[in-house]
Length: 111
Image (cartoon, rainbow, N blue to C red; front, side):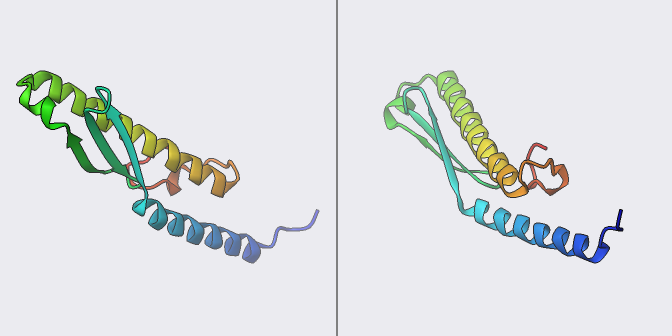
């Protein structure tokens, strides 16, 4: 068996790291939405797994049911983050050819 070409392996690893960084920048611009309460509360998460917007129907606010508003906000935010996390993981798996690369996930990403 021949020795692996270390230079070639390092070049491939560097190329993969560069593509991962590019994907992270691209994902940061993507938005993932979810809603709760039949659309009464909507949350939008970024590909960086950060909430960028929460929209609450005015009628829900005027209901005076503070606990329901809080529950629906939490549900919408959690669903938006789950959508974003799932999409981010799929993109990284696609890029890596299915290899597990836990150290190359974006900050806050599950690995």
